[in-house]
Length: 365
Image (tube, rainbow, N blue to C red; front, top):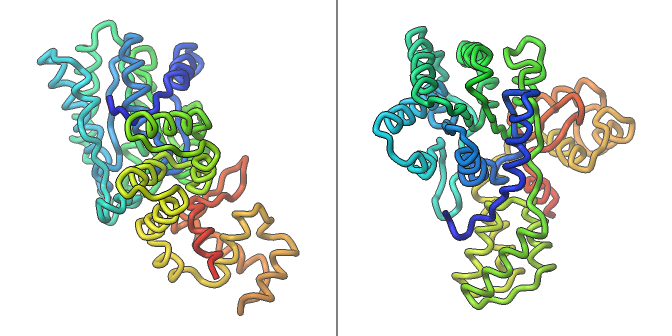
């Protein structure tokens, strides 16, 4: 296992306990991108599940954005091949995770979130998917198959994927005794469409659980490892503040740590460098150019918890933009931000921003 991996075995056990209770056969782990969900699933949840008698099968729906069914088929084909050869299953979990991505490796590749030419699965592909699941289920013997599906919200991003969503729901419904599932999702908006809309096949099917941010114990782990392995002494509080500035993203925190090691810079300079990487990788400058003045104002307002239809914000729109401060203009702006994936809307929490770093960029003078 990666020596830099901060194990969260207790959290993995908590999720498995929920499945073991039998109240639900499916969980959805929800958190924004780059919060460490995939590594947690592969390095904590899957190995622990294997110890507890499960057969974990990992599939990413972002392996092929235009044909997410291919990710499921590939995962089941690989699992079936390994079961027939009877090797150590951990080889499957240690294989490189493939997600569609763009960008410079130095900056950190940015996963692409939307299909540009979505394709619906054929009836033959859906039948093949079911047969693969049947074969894996049979070869698993007494073990319960644990289907780990990454970026499940992708099923809600195009109507072309509806046949796959309906088929998957049926397959899981029919096998609740022998197959359990854990979904991960990074867009609260599309997860809400997939899991909470009455016309969705997954409506009230999945138990939704939050993926908590890493805390001070993670920072302790980094401080101790830097001191022990690299003779670099950093202050716990200063590193923790840097983690906050990075929106508690373990991915970007490790970029900062790498900078500390390779450049011998202090935390302040390493943080500045990492924030620059985020701006470049996420293309905040490009995003900002696509936003209308009311969109920028609205995004910043949502980041501070303002009511987008309140008198205060409508007055602000009137004063700071060239459009009227009326609900119709705000509603159109909200729709643009939703379609761009910059905000999410859920029933319980209302509107939420999805790229906190963009707030810092837009607030720059």
